[in-house]
Length: 352
Image (tube, rainbow, N blue to C red):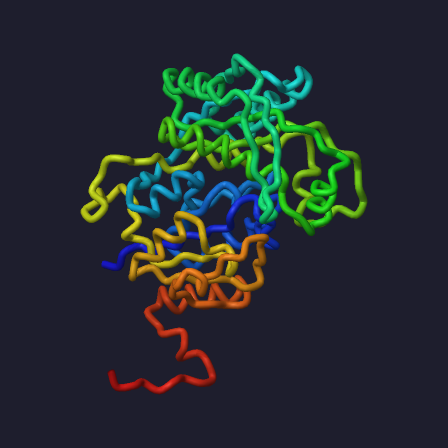
């Protein structure tokens, strides 16, 4: 019996990826890849689309820090049919804006049947600050991380299985970075700070987590890029996070990487990795590059603010121009066909 063909799709967060660096515009890529593999493992940056979302039985929603641990062989992934999701709201969110997020949660419960428990408000404002690095990537800081951890611990004691966080983010309506992002030509100014919030909870409690920022609605702009338009739909980005967490796999931290349970997915079962060409320096990517069975496909069209290529790192990859070409490589690999046999010229074999 063949093992399930398993693909990991990574589009790094907050680095200005031309595809997948905006409001859910990586979802079509994930949808397409999920059709040519048995299991697709990806992360919230790819699947989150504000009030838009994509739910597929063979797609696993894995937070970035957990994905790094999984790729390194430290953690396994245990698929589930549903999670009880706990909600954390930042004390710094204004009452009216807080109510909008509570109502969005109620809507998800009532219309999608997702199990969300009662919410908890942090005992201090989280005081999130946004920054941009010299490389052009976004990042951020949390003024009161202990408050976030205390709220998480209280929810976990109530028996929740995943955590959604809504933190108040700074409103920067006049920011040039924000305006560029809305026009589809810049870095997501929120993504780096969002990653820090979820990483903190996952590292501490080893439980699925994702974040949605609380922001005041932006003024209407008729020139918004289609790639950013999902964030113009309403007062909250929370629905996609709740949908993703509702079936996010649980993290298994005590298992045998080489003799896993049939119910646990481990890094040794990964067949292929798809990444942007010039963003090859992430922890998960470096870990998977050490596994000989993993075919790494880099996509030239998906440019980022980073400049770390497989050539820089000495990683053996299959370079393609587009995700359309990547789909073709995945199909041939899954079928056991040498993709070079589909090219007009085949190099001759040489004596060793």
